[in-house]
Length: 229
Length: 221
Image (cartoon, rainbow over all chains, first blue to last red; front, side, top):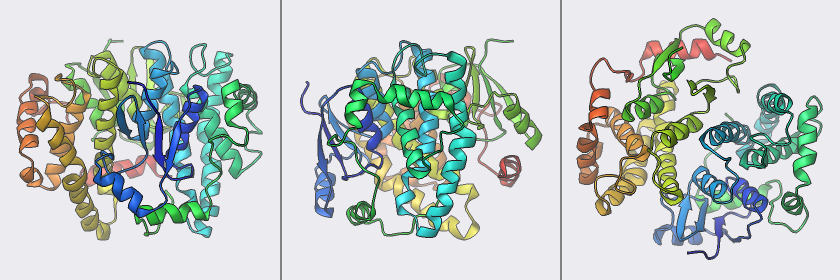
């Protein structure tokens, strides 16, 4: 049963942002319900909507899906962004695993102390430039194609663009040693659905600020200190 | 070169153990290369076989696969342990991801400092009993023998692995979960799993001091 596609999360990036990116890239419209109070969250819990008591939660095709990876895989497959066979899917999964690990270093960044933020910024840039970007630079160089996998736009391309932009927010010239990635960024950004998502007024969320951190802590009662990894 | 998948990792559970479980459950034989020294690891990096400079590495069907989730998804897809359609796959993915979150706590436990171990053990117990096990207890109550689609899948393998791993830390953890107790017995009696649970199989023992030392030595930053 088709119906509304609805995202339940905070009004900010977190673990939901990759899902917004993928839906937008696929040209799929969606609604959002933003968690602002503890009461809203408890209502979702009591209603049994959150399988493991956590958000993100996405209502899609009659399911209340949780676990961002599961949600992303479902969307990718449904909208033909998951390659043409098992081997292409394996490559996409590998590449997405890498960009997921890279974005993982950025995920908890807003929750760190000022001092830890500086250290973590350096870690993010170091991991990006010495581990992750070289890997994708090589894939693009070796293949000489427009996209990471097969000859088609896929989830892996969306996820990589998202990761590139997030790292650039931490260091604007981070792509300077990576000509393939620079060209990739320009190419993928100009795909119509992505271009639209990158324009003001889209459902893309801004860099997390203190208000976002406060909201998450309040709703989840997550008042302990977060340490960098 | 045999056609068998080849696993490269430390001689212990870590992030490779779910892969061993899944291959074994699917009845697939595999070879293993054990990392023992830093030099071995550095050679792998120099040879360019580790896409993100990390293990697990599984060589399978001409691919040098890294990223555990990608590896497991490929194996599940290849050996028909991933449900019959997109919606069953979605359920399997959701269940596997939840179980992985629980297993992650067990994964890092041996590496936590002594003063944090009791607190971490309490967290594992709390999450198992209050977050994860109740979900699967409920699913099994309404389903038949298996978690998804009345057919053996990756989700069942991941769950039996997790149950046994938690029980090693908290022996009576299944006491409030009769469905899970029955599930555990059922799964343990499936021929491929039964074989994997016997001595002499590729299953690895719980991490010990020697394993921890080896890991820290090889991967020291």
